[in-house]
Each structure stands twice: as C-alpha cells, then as structure tokens.
Image (cartoon, rainbow, N blue to C red; front, side, top):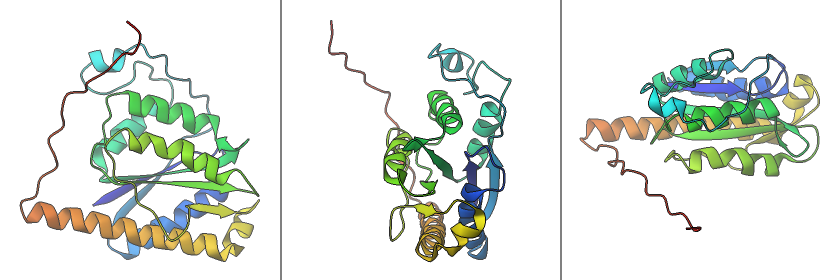
Length: 208
C-alpha cells in the first residue's frame, strides 16, 4: 500500500513539507509506503475545460509542460492521496488549485481512494483553505480521512511548525488514521468486499 503526498507549496522543504513529512513518517512506521511529490515552482496553467482529457482515453491532460500529468500517473499508482498547501489569502495556493483542477477534471482517477488535506499557515485562513480543497475529494467518491482536529499547522518556518505541538499531534493522528483506513480496505478486499459499482454521471441542467 502506498500514499501519495502532494506538496502544493513553492517551497520544497518549507512548512507544508514539514507537516507532510510528519504524516509520512507516521505512515511508514505503520507499514505504509509513501512518496512526497512537489508540484514545483514552474507555472501550472489553469484548466480550460476543453474536454481533451476525456477524448484521449488515458486521463491525461492535453498540456504536458508542467507536473500535472506526472501527478495523475502517480495518483493512479497510489492507494491514497494527501494534499498539503500553504495558506495564501485564506485560500489554497494558486499552484495547487490549478494542479487539482486539472487532475480531477481529467476523469476522476481516484474513486474510492482515501484522501486527506492539510493547510499550513502563519496565523489564519486555514479552515477556509481546508474547506476549499476538501471539495475535490467530495466530488470524486474519495473517503475523507480526518484527525482529532482540523488538519492544520501553524508557523512561519519549519522550526516554528515543529513547535506547534497540537498541530504536530494532529498530523501524527492523521497518519495513523490513514494507515488504519488503508488496512481496513485491504482487509475488506481479502474478505471479498469490492468497491461500489460506479454509475454513469447524471447531469441536470436548470436552464433550458
């Protein structure tokens, strides 16, 4: 079993990474393989809604000049997803927003895979950010894993984040809960329980 942790910060080893690393270490301690994937610092264009990803048959975005398609491939190979983002103006970073828009628009490749979301902030805006990015899983049939508090850490440097004892505990418990969820799913598969059959999407338009 493997969890893909996506670092949506422009800083490869900053505060967001620090929180993700605590979760990853906890998962590894519970026998779960992890990979922290950095979306990078190069521009990630927003989704154009062109529908090309649905036509090519492989859930790949038509644009290949950034890290989105690599992220899609890694998500296909993983059993669960955790996304971390810094708080920018009480929202997720523009980079991770564009990244997730295109990953999830490209055919919802992660149905029934557990997901969790983490916000890293200096002071405020974390709950608004979590509300924003958690919606991706909510529309993609992904069970959302929680902790004993909202998944956030506070601090302006990695060192300050590590001083946020409650935030670090929240990350540890999140890692334990994610490991438990994956182990339950694996046990269910061994017992012959299969994922629910996915129905074709019904769309209702209100303007005729």
